[in-house]
Length: 250
Length: 278
Image (cartoon, rainbow over all chains, first blue to last red; front, side, top):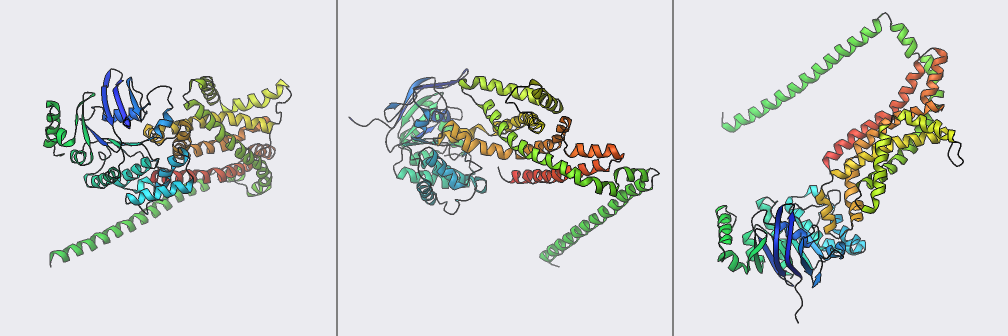
């Protein structure tokens, strides 16, 4: 019997009042796999990621992490979040802490690493993402691209089973997108399992093993990027991609 | 003349004009200050009542005589202020944390905290000082403090605890929800998120309004004089009443200013620093 997928999302629904955002999402992410979620703004990509990280409660369905149901009310959400890493569109770094403190906080408080151990790991990650020398800076001193790379390091410092990336380049100036994508590419090359919501079609095509098109709260089409992004089957997917193409985003 | 030479000339001319404007501005400010302030001073000093004003409020000999006593009275104000300030900082934070908590088990505490704030912020401080200072000893219960200094301190702590709790609460509420999300996402518990992420930012943000309340507290310490305590204001009042000269009051006012003005400058600097960071 093969190992269960790292993430297994089954029939997840989520409404905000009258608004049904997710209407039964089925999706799995296997070990070392990167799955990209594409879809229009408001299609539920961010909500899905927040539900997987238990920052929002689902209405129905299940999410399994390594074969265990994590969306059962009896499950401790803190323990689950310690096994996942989430990177936000707006970085959400802690402005009162230095770059180094941002990264070691979770490692020390949630994962009980010693300061020496956590700082060593943090410095290695900063070096890897081209941020050596910025340890003592505050987030305000950094560019958006640098802040997002710190956020990546912060999420990865907890050695997560899977990284959830929520539109990590959408808040960046165009010339800063590349450096963040480079960092994600680097993690992918190492075999980090990830589920990412993105607007960067070229990036989805390059990094993702599979691409899922989220439309009106459901995964309408799921498959290899060369299929979904180049020769999609569904008319809705074609329309979405054509609109992106016209907007010059591909 | 080439285009680049012309540019250089114009830049020099612009700089000269800017310097000239700055010089003229300074000169005008100086002249108008001399005219306005000098005029006011001349008006006061040449008015027919000036000698009486001077003898009643600015008598150097009365100041010299009264100052040591007023100062020793004021020392009580300072000590009371320092102790009450620390109590208020802790009490206000505890009340604010209870009011912002979510758990259903804490509901009764939340209710009490809300009542605490409504009650003690809503009652005039002078009434509270009177009520605690005279009311508690009147109960004649053993174990309750009877020292008016302690009772006055308790009354001030309750009153300002209510204010400061609300300042803290506003600070906590002002930290964007995304900070809590980020703290939870790295695996912190709600308590850890509050302690390491939300509170440090909230407290930094409310530094200036907190200090503002402390300037007010420093002045309101004088209210314990109604309990018969010989603090700075009361000492000055006693001397003034016996000499028919109000200079001792001025000595007391000067001592308050010696504390509140530096505090106010700290508030200003914190405001400027706060904009630069957080």
